Length: 292
Image 1: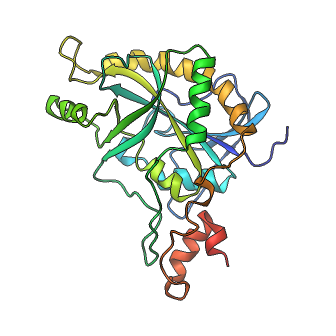
Image 2: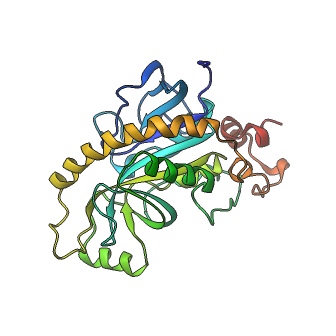
């Protein structure tokens, strides 16, 4: 293998702060026009493939979901050469048959966040990027295959994920409302991460690791942090096993999806009207459109 730019990025969710067993090649401190990412990015070797690993909440879990600098996280991975992002997140279940410890790959998302910058654009440059299908279909299918081949519980796809603001868990009324939406999963971390990945023209898919039934379920214990933490560790161990299969599989998969050209026809602002400062920012992220 070569130890150059890693084409595969891994964003670890709650409980997944490092990758024991992966060979550490180096650590990168990356500055971006949107600040610094959640932590140093570890370039690791997994089954002979280089990958860039970033813990979303920082090592030791220091950063609230609302405080995560997702723009810096996504931009930093793009700057390092990442093309496809394998993301992981702890989630609650909104359905009886999505059990704690299940691994599920969602296909849709509902945005219930309120306080998070969720686009790279603005500042005089307008773009409207298609987001009808928020997760990369090819990468999602690869994840489902990997979960099933690894013998992990779950392996479902096609579910809708609600991303709420947090940091408090849902009220019972909210939990019941999201169930009426038809959603199956709930978390606090997938947005704006997956929106920004699309704007950055990265393939992005998410493994949801169920820790609990949300508080809708009357015959289960109400969600509490002790229950969540117990399942976090079990899920993290399974996630590390899964990555040994997913990283090399993703590295062999050609990018034939639309993700890599998401901004091709989305930038509306006339070239002569684009402010130089904003163009300089965006050139770091999207050089094919802003380095001309």
